[in-house]
Amino acid sequence: MNNTDNINEIRTIIARHKRWDLLALTAGVIALMIAVLTFIALFGNMMVDGMPRLTWEFFTSFPSRKPESAGILSAWVGTTLVMLVTAAAAVPLGVAAGIYLEEYAPKNFITEIIEINVTNLAGVPSIIYGLLALGLFVYQLGLGQSILTAGLTLALLILPIVIVATREAIRSIPLTIRESAFALGATKWQTVADHVLPYSAAGILTGIIIGLARAIGETAPIITIGALTFIAFLPPSPIQDQFPFLSFEWLMEPFTVMPIQMFNWISRPQEAFQHNAAAAGLVLVIMTLLMNGLAIYLRYYLRKKIKW
Amino acid sequence: MGRRVPASVISYPSKSLRHNRKRYLKERVIELLLFLAAFLSVFITFAIIYLLISESLVFFEHVSLWDFLTDTQWTPLFDDAHYGILPLVSGTVVSSLVALAIALPFGTFIAIYLSEFAPFAVREIAKPFLELLGGIPTVVYGYFALLFVTPLLQTIFPSLPGFSLLSAGLVMGIMIIPYVSSMTEDAMRSVPMHLREGSYAIGATRFQTAVKVVMPASLSGIAAAYILGISRAVGETMVVAIAAGMQPNLVWNPMEPAATITTYIVQVSLGDLPHGSTGYQTIFAAGLTLFLLTLIFNILGHLLRKRFREVY
Image (cartoon, rainbow over all chains, first blue to last red; front, side, top):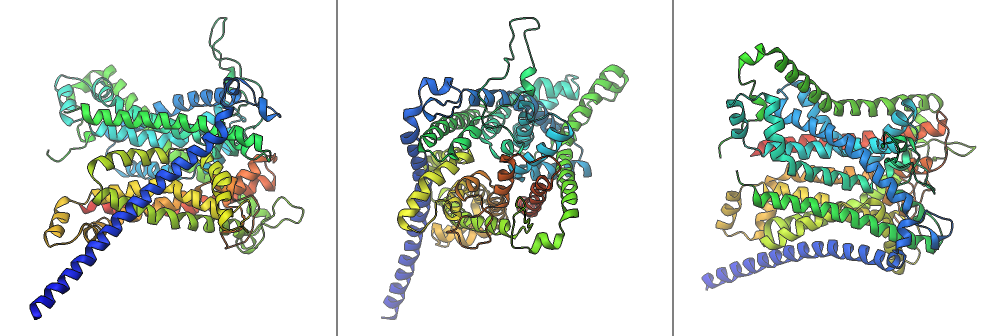
């Protein structure tokens, strides 16, 4: 009698724990579903509002006071040029810093300080970088509200991302590769430049793409440096038909970028402008999704292909 | 797999290298350049601190620190100027609390599911998907909050105004879920398998194992993930600037519109304030407040992560 009681009690306990188990599983799936549904709602909502505006003219027209004829020409040209500056500044600096911290840095106080700083900078809100740029680039260095200022600001912002990605990629190269190079008489830099860097290039590239995808969507720091929101002209082309064929005049020109243009349209009361905002948002989301997707694919490909 | 020796331990392979002057010099110059690139991060931090403090000091010559911390009005651009940071802090705190009330539980549920329950195939799809979600620009989330979530909430609460901390906070919360879930999951996955096996062997369910074995073992990593989430919510700009309105408002009710610290900086930057005016300096004082807030969270998170790395 007592025995059956015990067994029944144990059965209820087991049943209760299994119920909790199921509940936790359901909660996890529901939470994941909410994330999926949000994405569908976000994307679907923008598709419905913005799709009709996504015509060829939308990409080849300047912003305008009339919503029907407004486009994102100056915005996407601006974004492209700003990204050029960002990549040109953040990639060499970030990769060099990553190499130093992983291959050269002695274990001392200064290295520790640098590492803490990199971690901390990754967590600083982006708008603070905007304030830094406003005080340092715009006023102290006198660069003004130019493409150069915006590009450098975003470069500082994504520097920690590039550094961390470089370090991780370099760390995954086995020590034996370096030892083989040293055994053949290579110097430290020869080893790094000819072996470590080429082998970790794909991993570093992944980090760079993720960083640039982040920079493309950043709005707050660009607003803070006081970038104009109504730009109906293009900066002078970097490629000229006369000698020396390259011009850097565009670096100092005022500009607008995609997220700024979108923010500008969102803040207008007329509904027609908000459809423009949806269309610009759609272009922006597709761009970042493609870039992040490429980065994820690269990482996946690396994990599968490379066996040391 | 033996213990990994850090690459920096290897020194120059041969002492005779030093005799080759040119080659040696080139190596040292390169090392110096690389060091300078790494040291740039320290320089950036100091530049941020220097700028924020130097501009704020000028600001505090006009406004006493006491007024800044206790005045309940923030109207620096009016004739009757008040410089109390409290309304901006209240907006920041309320919107962050709404966001965290969404992001922390949902992020944790997703992490538990992905780390302890999900089949391999689901995890392989869900992780990159969450990463993509985290990569969507914040201005797009702002659009979503203003033109989709707010109207949706208004059908439930008809009294909800067109701008509210609630809808901004909700969307911000969803935006932060991927950060919290991926870091929490990483922390949970780094708990050694034999701890789970021990738990299963004495008859625990997966949920019991997750809550009583895995989560306590990865507590500092999970705490670091939460702190990162908090720091992101406090520093988030575009969603609140678009969906929560720009009016500084000392409220603790999420159903009201209010400005956050970040919103105020955006609002001032959109206007045309002359360099050196008191209005110009206020954004640096606001920025300093924000920087100090997030700095505390970041350092706390760094210390926790460090502890968590040393456990196994």
